Image 1 (cartoon, rainbow, N blue to C red):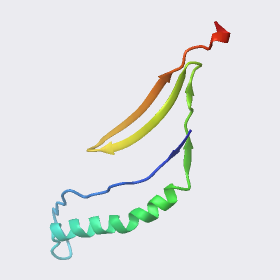
Image 2 (image 1 turned 135 degrees about the vertical axis):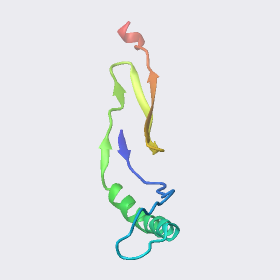
Image 3 (image 1 turned 60 degrees about the vertical axis):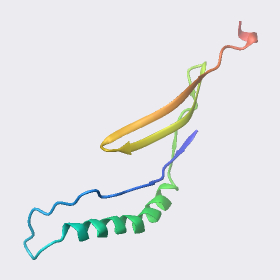
Length: 94
């Protein structure tokens, strides 16, 4: 089983400007520009990520098949999902 990576969404929620030494920064304009830059860069990064696959084992021991692997990151939480399917011993091994 090969794991392919892709970025679906990157958004900057809030920008806070504490101080600026060379002028006045507008947090809203900076927020819009960062989100626009992420939209432009996302296809390039996805093109690079598509060339790198990660091999994941498809079996866990003798009796479990692994499928439907999902990795995600949202609100500072990394989540991993995996579906194990039990496959009993065949009649020949009993």
